[in-house]
Image 1 (cartoon, rainbow, N blue to C red):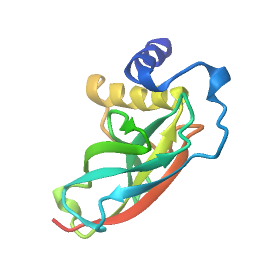
Image 2 (image 1 turned 135 degrees about the vertical axis):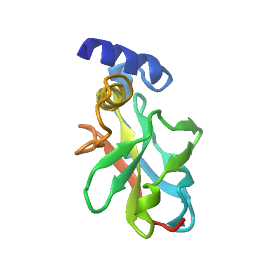
Image 3 (image 1 turned 45 degrees about the vertical axis):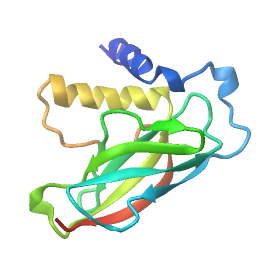
Image 4 (image 1 turned 90 degrees about the horizontal axis):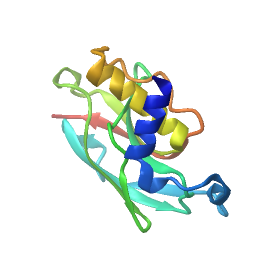
Length: 154
């Protein structure tokens, strides 16, 4: 089953991945979150930013981290990257029972192995009817580009 997950992850994230020889970054990747601009957010918020020196073989991925529980909730697909800009679309922040609760929005660089870990989580939740308890940690080998603490206000 793990091989199937890795194969599915490679297919889904294929445009981001290249051979390992060319994956050594020449400069340290950096990036920032540009949206949302205001830390007071609704149930859904647009999530985007910039990235410099994105290494070949890596994708930008969005996570919402429950500040109280420390659990990470990944978006089910990688963010799109064009030039030095990334765009993740709309993220769901908390539930209607979590008004005035803080969460961290994280833009994270993830390699192919990390994508496989995320996709294994997605398959568990969507197809194996495992309760979405989130991920206890970010995928191995991932790098946080930026974090923004937000509060759900509506």
